[in-house]
Amino acid sequence: PMNCPMHCLIFKADTRSYRDLPLRLFELGTVYRYERAGTLHGLMRIRGFTQDDSHLYVAQEQLADEIAELLDFVMSVLRAFGFEDFTFNLSTRDPEKSVGTDEIWELATEALRHALDAHGLDYAVKEGDAAFYGPKIDIDVRDAIGRSWQLSTIQADFQLPERFDLEYVGADNSRHRPIMLHRALFGSIERFFGVLLEHYAGAFPTWLAPEPVRVLPVAEAH
Image (cartoon, rainbow, N blue to C red; front, side, top):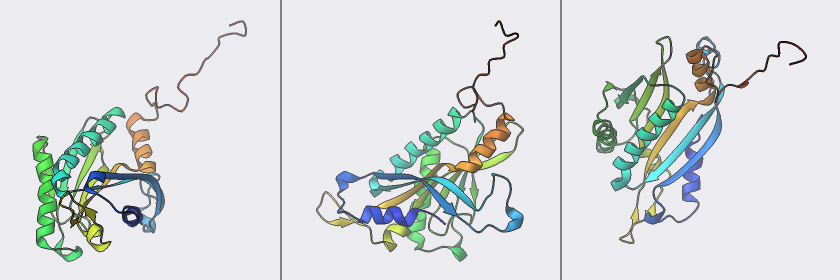
């Protein structure tokens, strides 16, 4: 269902130093989820899709800056495709469906909240809507006819580094646990293109159109 464990194994395959951090891993990874038949919807919700999956391993003191840079990155990419109307949501812990201590959750949630506040962004809080392993920021975009689509995600995760026993050697020569950030810009590539089709009603900008130019001669002599 997701690529996160494999990136943890890549991190763990070698001895890591604080000089290696932030360590950023990325892949266009195909994932499969047995969605219920009634929820399938064109390109918007399918059972096999491609995620632009990235996992960033950071030291605690790098966390706030990395999240802030990710927010800039997400907005620059979405704006390049012509989206300007964003909604930000901070999803918090569901105690019934989560793992980890209250302290770790509080630390992760506050790091995301601080990044949103530092950018001066308005955001809604979705109580209990976080993934089981950590809180997240979701970025929704509004298309040309006013519908909202959830595309980009930034999640702070203290759980997988703990469960995979990930470590790096700090400047003090002792072992430390990295923090893991999950980042998707487009989310599902298929769904993103579905949203683009709807947004432009098929009339893509020239740089994005599958057939940018068509020459129509008016007579054979021309």
